[in-house]
Structures are given as structure tokens and as C-alpha cells.
Length: 451
Image (cartoon, rainbow, N blue to C red; front, side):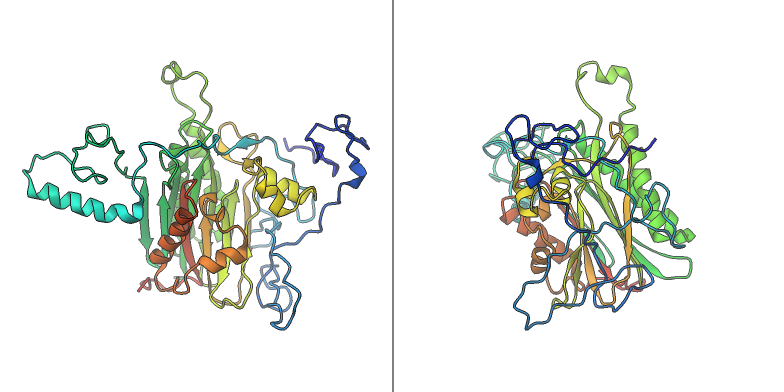
């Protein structure tokens, strides 16, 4: 059963957040004049670059602003277009264009309160850990074959079975602390960051071909909800299920947008299955909640760019011609996005609020309703799709900021570019796990890849 759409009036006082009743003119707690609340801004869907008129995808990109104009360009807001299949009809579960948006069924915070200090047993910065690990390997090879593993931090102590140095107590990098993968022209990097004790992000990348031989590349990025149980397992299960679903569906001729929709559904089922554990497994942890994560994915072919998501992980469009405007292709399922959409806060104010990262959509057995968002675009020029978790976009939130940090040679060196973006987040503080995948548009022919 679908939920009834909410009224346009705010559910809470914008001044003190006190719940309001329908028809209230003033807040009963603080007396705030509700008639002063600004109306919701008009819809600004993400459009297609440089094309004059609406293209076959039903999307129109705005031309670049004239260089001589002294007025700054209007910000490119997230897309609010419903997904359509190859025949132009709404996908199952997608509302018709122009219909009221279904309100959020619940809210949960995607992370616990941040600690005041860094973790005492924090692993070394992955950008310098490689050289330390190489030195440790050299030290090990110089010893006997049965010698214990040497710490990558102090390079002297031995590592115990729990993964800590017996000399300095330093936690050793785990397999998921830093992950990289390159599949032809698409690449992804995931890092634990500088404050989290584990990496709760995961990704899947791949390339395939459609039945007519047209190349296709794909990437899926998932962010585990830290306040949930086993968020690292949730993100890994979701990314694997979605990636496998896409690689199976695309060669069979499934339209990329429909394939991405079904991949998100498959990811949801995989996360839900994690909650189906024996009662005996929960005897000592009765208060744990269901594993959960967010998801964002993209499929790129020779002429089509498709994105799909649930939660607050994002996809950005960055054109190769940096004089053309970039764009954000997704809209967060979050408290901050709802405040902006309702006209109660500016985007800057909303994302500066401590409640900004309260998400209203996620994958998990305790999600009230699964509402995958999908949208397709047909850009008229080459570029790259940036698919990432909030561990990156927290440090490059707008499309313009993201465009500035994407290396110019991303098409030639996608893995290097992904490392640069992760490094940008680490340099900014690395307060969260960081994951980014890069897909070129159009998808190059099979056999083409990074230089």
C-alpha cells in the first residue's frame, strides 16, 4: 500500500522543530509565525548539456552561460525526473511525471556521533602505508620463512593474531581498509578514512556488451549505515548483488534503466537476507537492528547514461569540456534534501545542520518501503560520471566543486583519478569512509581502457 502524500505545510516548526498541527498559523511552543515560511521553490530538474530542445530521452541540458555575463550561473539542482523504460512508460513503482512525491516513511541517522578524538589504534594513511608495507615485506623476506608479520607502522614489532602490533599496539591495515579495482575504462577506489575504525563502504565495477555489441560499463557504490548492525556486510552484499544483476541483465537485452532498477531491487533482497539469521545468533545481542546501507549506481553505453539510487550516495556529471556546466544527477533521500525541497532552508543551511545526514531512504529489512530512483540522460558531449559516497562529496558538495577536483586526464587514467579524489577527502579530514567510481561517457569499445 502506498503512502498518502503529505500537505505542503511543514510538519515541524522551522524555528524550534516542534511538531505542528494541520492549519496552525503560529507555533504553539515558540510562537513562530508560520505564514512567514517561504514557499517551496520551483522544480529545477537536471537537464541535458548543450542541446537545443528536448532530446529523445526527454531531458534538456542547459547551454553554458555566456562568458561575458556578470551574473553567476544558477546552481544545478538534483534531478527530480521519474524513471522511464525504453518505451517511455514509468517503471514499476515509479509515480507518473507530475504526480505528488510519496513522503518519507521513516528517518534514521547514517552514522553514530563522531568521537572527539581520532581512534587510538588507527591504521596509517593508505597513501604512505604502501611504502611502509614494502619495507616490512623486505624485512620479512630477510628473516626465516616462518617469521611473524612485521608491523607497517613501527616496522619493528610483530603482529599478533588479532591484527595488532605487539610493540606499538598499532592496528594493521585490513583487506577492506583500502580497495582498488580497474575494469577497462572504469575504476573505483574505497578507503576507510582517517577516523572510522573500519571501512563500511563497498563497490562493484564491470564492463560488458549489449546484444548488438554496443559496449557498456557499470559501477555500483554502497555506504553502510553506521547506526545499523553489520553495515559493512550490508554494503558488500548489496554491491555484489547489484553488480551481478547488471552483468547478467545487460547482455540479454534488458534496457539499462530497467536493468538498474532491478539491480537495486536485487541489492535490497540481499541486504534483507542478512536479517534472516537464527534466533540463537541474536541471544547475546537482542537490541541490534537490521543491517542497512545506501546505494547508487550508473550504467553507461555508447549513447546513454543511466543512474539509480536509494539514500544519500550521489552521482555527478563532469563534462570533458570544463567550460560546459557540470551537474548533479541524483537527489538525496535525506532530512537536508527535504528541508531544501520544502523551502524551509537553503542548501548551505540544511547541510550545515547536525541533522543533515539523517536519511529517509535505505536498503534493509527495516526500511518501510523500497522506492528506487532511476533516470536516464543522453549527453551531447564526452565526460565522466562520478559515483560516490558522502565521504567524498562532503568535501566537494556542489557539481562545480566536484568538477574542479576531477583530474583533466580522467579518461586516460581513471584509477589515478579515483585515487586523487580519495586523497582530496583524506586531505580534507577523512571523517568518513570514502568511495568513488569513475565511468567515462560514451563507453569506449571493448578492449579500450586506461593508458
